Length: 238
Image (cartoon, rainbow, N blue to C red; front, side, top):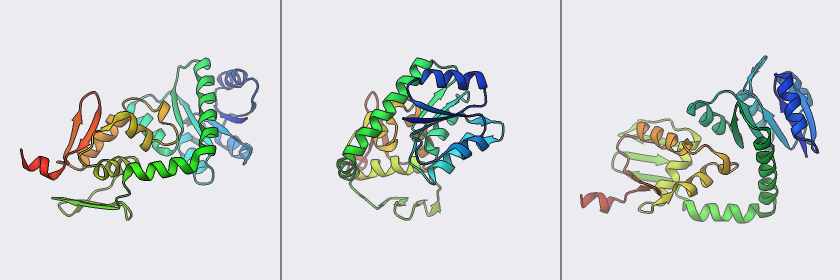
């Protein structure tokens, strides 16, 4: 496996490279060095966010525009919004400093195992995903209108802008109305490239944002299990 480590702290960068003994490791201490070293042979990028010549978030977006290579953020930015932003940018995992080199190595191995499994089962996964979401392209209920193909979402005729994560969550809920969706299933379907290591509160953050942007949506929290978009006939009986 070929790993690119992008970290401006030389001591930490060297420590990560040593902990990944057995893998081919390239070391970059800035974004400019990372860009010069990156090529199609890279299997994983371990990426700091705060770098001397720019943001790792911007570089992750740049990578996602041309490659599906695995990305792990390794950063001191440990607020909830930082974690959610990093994962929505396209990272497979998000690790906050301070951290254990042993845990980092375990997560790197887990990503490689998962990527190898996805290569062998991509067709089956795609089919299962379509079956679960129901493939609903549009939805109209009361004051809400959602068109997922055109990414058009309105409340009482007013446009609302939703992030990709919020769109995925909303589509799952409305396509499975009346069905309680577990937190585990939602996380697996929303963060398809790294749900195993997504922070536990990432789903709660996404749900809170969705409720704030779409006030009055009939989404009920089923404590200890997950969420359900209540059907109209159930709401009418109340």
